[in-house]
Image (tube, rainbow, N blue to C red; front, side, top):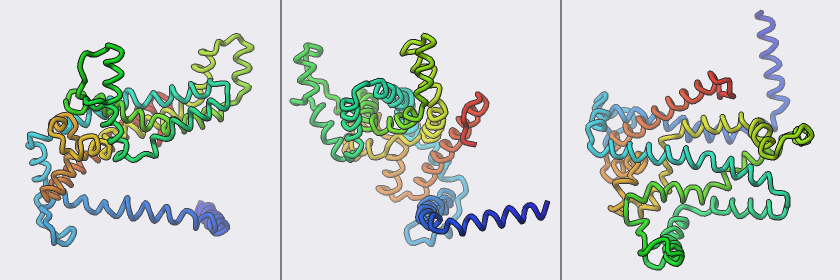
Length: 315
């Protein structure tokens, strides 16, 4: 057994050096992950300390779970957690399946020109920063001459302008809608690629057997890309408490719109406001660690559920 193990190690080392040029290409990515993903994890200790500017990292006064107790007692945290869960859950329920449906519709188009045109147009909003996107949304949904309100009134659907960005009750819907507009086409790329790998002979065989077009989409297309859907769903659930910091900051004018704060304030903006504006770095680190742990547990739970259901789990 020892000889077999040594032989395997030699083969691995031999393959590694034989592919030295490919290994060089991987090294920058490895360094990026180490520097920006693993090294910053040392900052987790701040959540258990009373960190002050000027303290050497890791040598501040230890306070145990004091920061987490303060987080639990903070009257604003329950509201922040509610907003994060609601916005993220709405995006999961609505924004996750839409790219799949969009990819199926693109695949069913017969004309290559119109298909490529629709794909290109749907991708473009992704490359617009949220700074510009928010400005466009403000202009389109403005209660004073905005295109959306003008269209609603012209169609006699409303008698007066709707203040979309001046009432907190509308914010959750606006957050979901703007995210759909910006990311629908981009998120559909991986599904379009997965559908392109489906064997065309399967469709021909199903058509000969009398399967309708909808049945071919349901049993062949969706059935073939199901492992991809499950894997992306696991990743999405594991990222549930990340409710898009950039989007929230821009749509609320960097949380300067007091009328939206009660519905728009999420964990990420809360951490930013507490940690930077009030210089409570340890408290913000505790809130960030709380979010990371919950996301990790959700990831494990989603992966375990997928494994039990016989789907393609991560591990």
